[in-house]
Length: 80
Image (cartoon, rainbow, N blue to C red):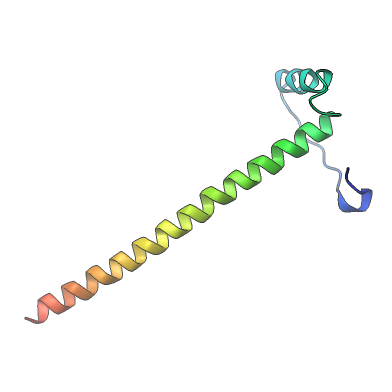
């Protein structure tokens, strides 16, 4: 599992309906504890968000390249 010195304790507030669902997953032996459910959810969220952010950065970079190319063509066209 996790080493004590590799983790940090935090306090969060969750709606009771979320806790009931978390407890349901623990009761089904899908997870050993509430903490493990939350760690897994946070990890999965971070991985998915990173994918989205990286994809957006790539799209912005491509948009910049396209804009530069458009401006280059415009400058070239305006000279003639």
